[in-house]
Structure formats: C-alpha cells, structure tokens
Image (cartoon, rainbow, N blue to C red; front, side, top):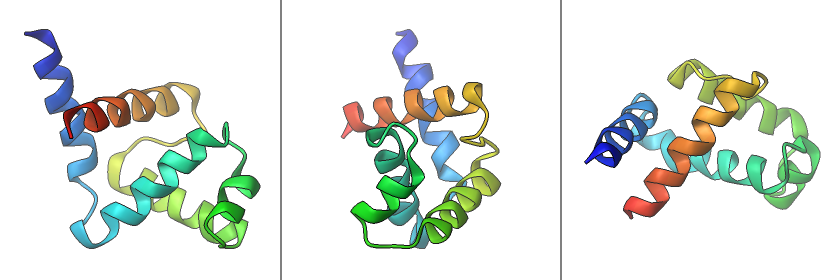
Length: 88
C-alpha cells in the first residue's frame, strides 16, 4: 500500500538525527506545531530560553535537511511526524 512508502519516508527523515538527541528534538518539533510556530510559547512550555529552542530547531534542520522556516519543509516535517505517531 502507498502509505508504507510514506511511513518509510517519515522514518528516513528522522533517522538522520542521532539517537541520543532524537527524543529532545522531536519533542521540540511537536511543541513547535502545537504552539502554531510560536517559538517563545514552545520554549516556555519546556522551560528553556527561546534561543535554546531555536538552536534545537537549527540542529533538527542540520540533521534532516528540512528547515521549519520554509513552509514546504515545515509541511514535510509535520506530515512525517503524523505518520510516525500513527505507527507507534
């Protein structure tokens, strides 16, 4: 089925993140979308400075090649995240 290709693609996007950083960076990604892209609000929700949060989002971009500041990239990360959640 076609959704298997999407699931494999989703896994591949996040596979580039080192295991010891994956949980933290994915948590930030979830919060970023939950807060509708409001970095200050997302950072406050996990009690870190907004620059720390931005730094983590930068690391996510470095590892995945997808930058949340670009709408298409943000959409890809959002979709990939939804498929990973559905797979758990």
